[in-house]
Image (cartoon, rainbow, N blue to C red):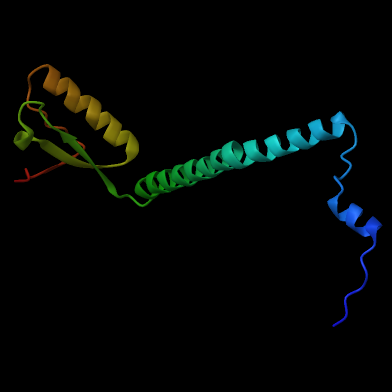
Length: 127
């Protein structure tokens, strides 16, 4: 292998500082580096978090729709704050009926009565 001769002009080109133009070009380059940094550190994680929230909302909506349209019963449970072993539990079909049952049970408990809703099936207490 034979090496060619190196001329003085070639060495000067290798060691020369590139021409960036004026200060406007350097400012634009710094701005571009900062913009890429902000996008990589801030915008991309926010987009990914937003996508996760959208996926979670779709799962929750699908589960509510499935329970509502497929007739799966909702479980409504009233647990006293002082005695969790004395929890009262009912099954009711339908979202509106469950909301009505919650209101009916809350009103009965506030007045000191034993709740016995007509639209729901009472479940035995769990031990």
